[in-house]
Image 1 (cartoon, rainbow, N blue to C red):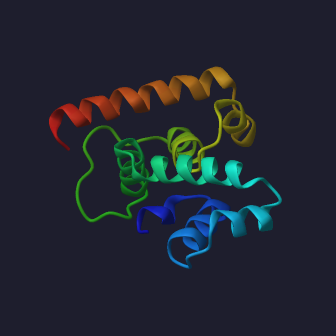
Image 2: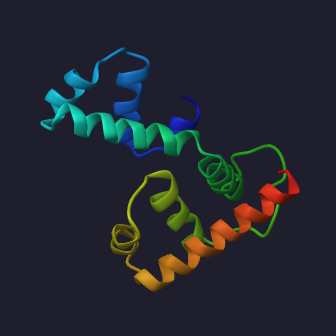
Image 3: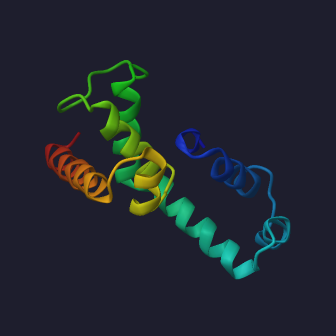
Length: 129
């Protein structure tokens, strides 16, 4: 659940209710006012995202850029906009369009940052970091 700290509050609460409190998909769906199948898909996507290496990489880079990690971070320091895009899109799971709207930047700029983050992730994975 350590990785879950980087999630949006609603997703973090949902994941905790499911994994730690033992709430069922049916219970969570009833509370959220959605079908059980939709809740299962939402939880599956959420767990897959949190457990991905891309999520781990972005989380460490965002935390490292903010000075929250003890060790050095490989690669150039991310600027404020790139950290914001990484947080909203990769950690909070928002779409490109929603990320652009939330940050007040163009969809093109968000796509460009996402591509650069993914390129850096692939380079880092190749280096074994």
